[in-house]
Image (cartoon, rainbow, N blue to C red; front, top):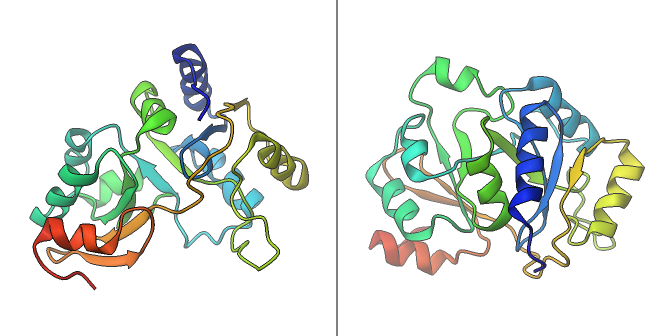
Length: 214
């Protein structure tokens, strides 16, 4: 992918802090991001994507250490994080308290949480506000002829033009080559459970945990 400069990412981080939307590339897809504590900004993503409110956004955490300050991390969740973060694994994690979760109204409980590599991970580290993200596409856009999540800036622009969503910063990383989703594992209880397969293979999860994960 095309490199993104530190100056560009700093601009994106300041825009997030100001309540604006930004779009950044990943190896998988382009992602639209907002301040996770800013309900108006997050709602503009839900509205533009036609995404059900019950289908929460992903909270991008800067590190496992920061994640531990907000979430209950069971032993198997810790094993997965140490093996695959930063990377292409997301976990459903329980908030440490209702009050902590209430500050992130678009993320849900348990929270879908990841620690991403590349520009998205750098953005989460640079921003002085928590980052909520999702793919750039209409929710449920999975038909045979549907384009799916955006993998180029051109596809991003078509999404913005068709939905009226306003993104202040769009970072051009070229073509996203992987075109596959995060793997999702439910770690809200001590026994981790695979929810959705993706770039991190089910066998890899089983190998780390030392048991067959269904």
